[in-house]
Image (cartoon, rainbow over all chains, first blue to last red; front, side, top):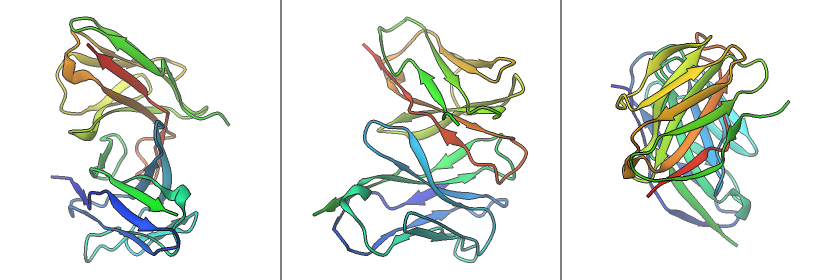
Length: 114
Length: 115
């Protein structure tokens, strides 16, 4: 089936630390891959996306590269800030279109301490 | 451009009642999807509408239904509410469902509590 697996948290880091949140997906079809972020009490915000192999999505200092050979889409940031504290979701499209909705990982709760 | 809006933001119901949630997509977006978010199950796809037609449905019982209007606004209905229906219900809109690159933009959600 179509699934997404990501490391669950909480992940606690100090400010300015390097961040990696792992995400792997099942290799069915040719999915687009996304990272969404959810701040407390809010909906999901798109952080970045990649639509084909070797694409790199980037936004607000976050990056993720679509790795088909390892079926991975790990999220990275070189220097995290307290304001990055949130829950991060990795997601994939099902098959080749959006009609089947997105499949999400369980989410990773990130806590950045000053 | 205004984002996806959902009403109401918070709702309290009792078991056995029914509820209707509303979603207005981003202007120009024709596809609306609904998701349920719970601590135990995470984010799960409910259904997706495009041009007033349900295109796909997730693995939820028939108590969960929805519809889309000609202006792309969408509603979802849950009948005979159960305690386990307590969740954050998220609506997402996108331009066009056939393009795999189309991004879904989410609203703030409606938090439903069933007592």
